[in-house]
Length: 407
Image 1: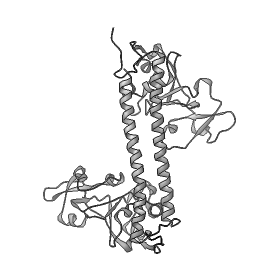
Image 2: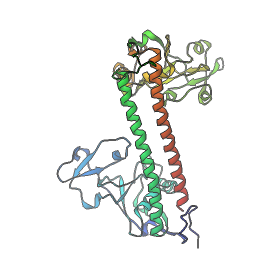
Image 3: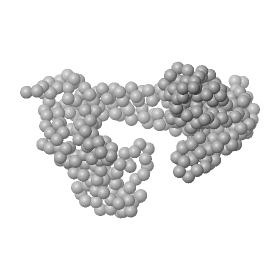
Image 4: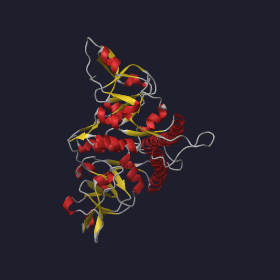
């Protein structure tokens, strides 16, 4: 008889684990498909919350309600749902309502702890099995027969509960960290709006007011430059590092160390001269599928040797002294981004021209106040980064636990 024991186990438990297939333990049924025209956006009499894939999207606030669903498509907080098609294998619990046809509801016996089953379904090993069974078609689909084939290895109910409670405590820590990060981000967003609207002003080191902010267009304080450099390599040209659209869209830190990760292409001498990157330059994304998605930016913090930017980007080079850290923040405030969005033109893809970019108005404080503002936001960003690092570490810790606490 095969020994079924996890790598990591609580001390008091010694008995070998059992193994069954899901067919012998659980029962599943899938939900109900309701046309959008028959859904309600607010709760009405005799209606139930309709659990769809939209509910699973992070940050989504769209809710649907449906009237008079049958009993077999209703779930309660103790039930476990799992997506069976599309993004197959996503596990949901602690939700009440009527579930969509894209979900299975998994009914389990009293010998199985809900939390243990939930975490078992989310392990890498089980997820890989689910995805393999769902197939590799354009829309993966897990059927009842294949789900029932999955092997389920489990200990006594007491040990199941112990494992589930421990993992739940890790999840609670994760949720608290995510909430903390969200609160910090909301605080930064709100305080940034107040500072750039001058509702809040800093004092100088002597407690006196700084001088009045100056209203300037970007064209007055610098120049915009497009590029003609593509991703091709030609024998008669010089090799260069190329900053692409996605490097800026993802807000990557681009410096002489990280440029080794950039794409290597070739460019003419004239292109290398006109499209070089120096300390204080700001790269913008001037196009996107929606106006609100234009204007992602990256500030260059040091002269970049043998490095240029692609024709999908636009470079702004200030001709006055601007605190380099402040540049990062004034480019990302709602006032500037709102102007970029309004000035964008197009139908299927929106762009903003050099002329329009140059016309964008900013309120520019003195250099000393710029530094005060930049240092203030930088301190908030450091706190956000610290919490992000803690979230990542806790997620890795949980991933390791899932691998070792289950067989």
